[in-house]
Amino acid sequence: VRSEGPDHIAWPPEVAAHYRAAGYWRGQTFGALLTTLADAYGTRPAVVGQSADHPVRWSYAELDERAHRLAAGFAGLGIRAGERVLVQLPNVPEFVSVIFALWRLGAWPVFTLPAHRHTELRYFAEKAEASAIVTVAEHERHDHAATARAVAAEVDSLREVLVVGSPEFTELSAAEPREFPDPDPEGVAFLQLSGGSTGLSKLIPRTHDDYLYSVRESARICALRPESVYLAALPVAHNFPLSSPGVLGTLHAGATVVLAPRPDPDMAFRLIESERVTISAVVPPLAAAWVQAAARTDRDLSSLDVLLVGGAKCARELAERIGPALGCRLQQVFGMAEGLVCYTRLDDPDELVLGTQGRPISPDDEIRVVDPDDPNATSDDEVPPGEVGALLTRGPYTIRGYYRAAEHNATAFTADGFYRTGDLVRRLPSGHLEVVGRAKEQINRGGEKVSAEEVENHLMAHPEVLDAAVVSVPDEYLGERTCAYVVPVDGARPSEAELRRFVRDRGIAAFKVPDLVVVVDKFPVTGVGKTSKRELRAALAARAGNG
Ligand code: J2J
Image 1 (cartoon, rainbow, N blue to C red):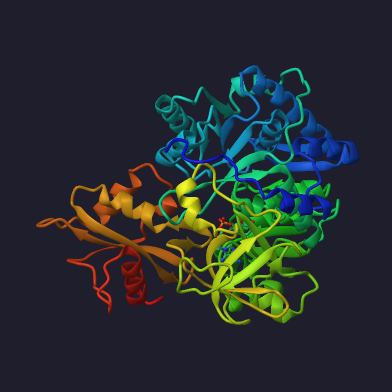
Image 2: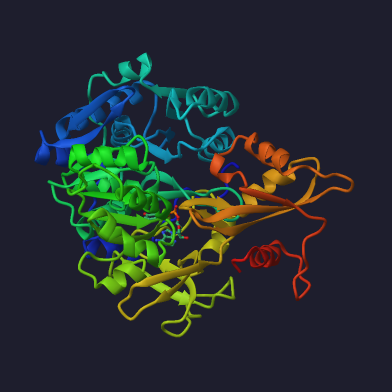
């Protein structure tokens, strides 16, 4: 998993010059942004949340000071500019101070999810040659500190395990503040994770300039003002609650972030009422849960003005129920950690808000809808307007390549630098996109992305498994669930329970464990007699009822 390609593929110089001239890239880093925000909004509330078991309210000035001290603390441990640091934190206030501290130092956060386990963390740490991991002692009954230590024992580069709330961390947070040279705004700021389709999640290098552009415009498109209050209900390390407009867009606007430890309606509604939340963001299954719970809640949700729904397709029926049930406006978001983010606009006609996934942020987001049957289609192979095709995109905040992944980049991007999103879309005359399906080998489990190949590889590590194919099956609540078809070795008949337990024990996120396992004698052969995984998945998915 070591270095196999460049860390960052920069935009061509003439393209970068255009992005600067157009005012998209402004030469500001996230560290410098926080200083500016503290000057402008000093005593106003920045972050509200729960740290260990005590409530926290940090003003902009306090957040700024904490990030200053923590940066000095990290530097004192020997963490340097350009080093990678795994950040595995749930929705705690320290998530915000830690990432700004790393940005001040010029170190790169690697945004892992709280759901990730040993095998995934080890892979990210090795791939990024991370020097430290920042985590919590425990979250949802998992001992994160123990997992982090076990990973550190196996990965040479990992020198430090820092546990938020520990005496050591508290000491770091009290370090004497000092200034660091501002990193290059066109250089990498952090590594975000891809959903993964071929094998494991790829690491996504995002720069200060490109990400800040998407954050700034997201805040504007979602009409954030200093008086706004954003409820972070989803896990904040994910690109959607981090940046669309998310925690960072909220801070950019001088508004207040409220961190929900859990996204369930009880917790969310309590915080909406007590903090007078104006805007939040959810995946479709959570939107459905909120809509249902709203019918029988005593909580006052009247402050809620906008609910963003994205991460997976929001069904028309659900979209129609959100406004009436929650007394707010719906904004659909179709985004990806690789870059492109589309929003329905707050002044769009109902038809577009309810029936599309929005239009791109930037006038310079280039969209091509190309031949969906040709995985190698180029940006010239466009389908006629209004027809369904595969979405390719390129623009001022969409990456030109994954981190250290030269081989994968050769197929994930076109020769002229378009990212192959793997999504099937239709483009309307207004520029709005309707997401109608997917060509990539990924299951979208209510917004949580599962790489079919990754799970197949875990299944095939079982001594009684000869072959495995993972497909999606429709699910009323999640939209899709995972189904693994398994062919056993001769004479063996492993049970579904045994196989699910086996995959879970491989040290991976629970959402990747197949929901269903079907043991079959052989895979069905497709009409044309092909036996490639791709064909097989398509045939199985068709059989499961969603082809
Ligand atoms: C259908 N599919 C969608 C939508 C994402 C904002 C919002 C979401 C993400 C995200 C994000 C969808 N309808 N509304 O990063 O900033 C599927 C597509 C897409 C993939 C990206 C953001 N919104 N999707 O979900 O990197 O398949 O980002 O390519 O996790 O999610 O997944 P991810």
